[in-house]
Length: 224
Image (cartoon, rainbow, N blue to C red; front, side, top):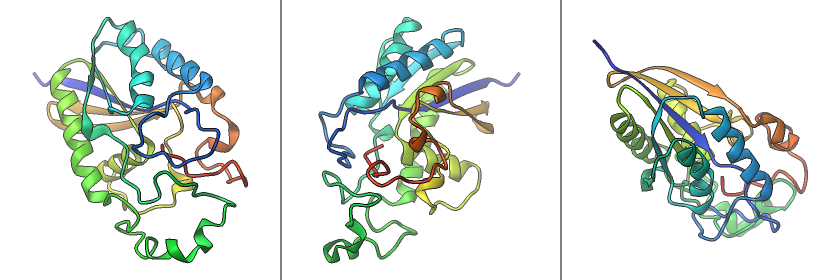
């Protein structure tokens, strides 16, 4: 008889970032009060599920998002470096709608290849590490359910790979809003379906929802 294992990959909640920094892998960025409410909402949403393993990216915002879920199931929180945010050469800077970053000559050399991409960790490398993290979570929870807390870009890239879409894309069209769940269902060791839910959708600011039109001063590509 085959095993059915479910791996929920969650994007962390909102981060306290008043200066609009692309924080990437920088330490010291924690959930905002709203982000903590998002984490609690998803923990409540998953409270009745058969979750036996919870693992997160080592970054603070991911661990703080995962903690209520682990606690509600009486589990220790594990970490996996493969769930970390993607590398980005603009880390530590502001880079988004309305700030003029695309017009600065010193940035042009990083924007020559959107297919790799030239400004950060190659998409294929993200696929390899994220698939490894998902497989490890699946093995840890075999026959049950696991939760992995990660970041927007790696989640979207691994989902695109599994669903056989091209990896290069318009970031504004990623279906991976704050505190969302991208759910991979395995039959034995094979992914047989992918689902997507937004348990905290009503808490997410409108301009941050998937497909929302960028707003000057609000659409910055913060570390995700």
